[in-house]
Image 1 (cartoon, helix red, strand yellow):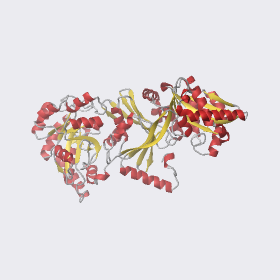
Image 2 (cartoon, rainbow, N blue to C red):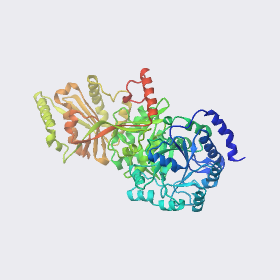
Image 3 (tube, rainbow, N blue to C red):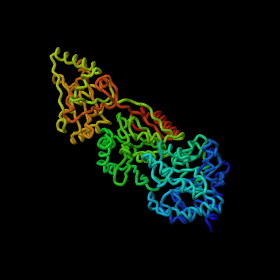
Length: 636
């Protein structure tokens, strides 16, 4: 019994189950990789057996699709014409199993297909996928053309195009096109991005090369509004039996998940996705995340990141108040960590909502990416963006280089929105910590300080500040610090970081940083009465002091305790190697008067509209049940 015979009963059952459901809402491209003879030969989640391939073709036809050459769909998409009811078959990388098993069966089925051919290394084991069999030889490719199969371009070496320098990018996109056209005997008009990766430069390079259409691993049908250079496909693999394929093809186009590839790879290999020397891992085990700490800190130093993006803060927060699933995204190039996202995931119904580690504390965070590694950023974002997951990243640094890679993945069915959120004032210090007070913009601050000093003298009061730079002194000052915090919160409740649920985290984190010499605590007194405090974090690699939190007792408001505390903090900053003060979130009047620069934060939301509707419904239900009253203050 042949593969064609074996599939008949299954296809008949699928046809009965799907009867009445016409193919509609756009064309489809089935993207395959290698084809093997039997299930015992399967080596990779993206392999399919010959029997599966044959079944897939029959299911497609049973559901009313016409199987056409890929360039027929690409040409219509390029003209903005409907592709409803059309289906195409593509084989990425042109591997030997395709020549041995797939092409003869497709000839028998009278089903056209297109080979996405990498220009170099014909007949060799692919460097980007060493466990697979070899690629097709030149002879095998020529025989395929003779049999009526088409050729499309898949770059010269199968490198990720995102982040390539311009000369290399042009060569990868155009360098072997003449060779492929000579092989085919006519123009090569279709292109596929290796690993599905692209950025704005890659899209421009493909357009400049004159390709009619280009294909990604974004999931979906091809509609009239789709960008011809970012066309979606359905990634096929051993997980696709007849019933699952029929389900995808019969459902309305608007309900398709936006990204199929990550789901396939996660399902079969855990949360590790390899590509072109890069390996992306989604870390859920706290012990494994702790193992990354040294490399995580080194990457943060390399990109000049602040303290709230580092493992000491992020993992301590997770240990004390984290809920749901830890989700630290890490991309390695060999043994080197080149990208990291400090995240966690909570469930809202069936959808995972991904947020920063530190969410709910005004944490300013970002995805860390080594300079020049846009490919790692793209891989990280595409790994995170799965059909049942949305990103809700509040207080993301607007100037983060990794953000551009996420925005490049924006598409109609899975939008990426970036909304202005807040501003973080910054002071670049001069030769002394107080040099900037001489600037015209600091006129008001100088006036406030003079008045505070005058009022203290007139009232016969003394003002003093105690400073802790080690654990022992911190413990000594904590009772006075807590007293000020209590009085401040009683008068104007905000967020008492020394009370639960935050108290355990705050004290553990500050003690860890004090032990490491990265925490400075200041408590100010009028006579013997504590009136204000300031907690600051040091980042030696950037000579930056970050103001974690500061509060004052309203009983001492007459003496402008905020300004007096800033003066003392800035005065001692150079003694600790500080050349820059980052005041973090909030543009209060005091911060504005003491800053001479700053940076913006944004809220980033990414995910399908359907997934967000589920999240919003789950949140509304939770609020009705009084489980949560403020979605922005904590986890779902």
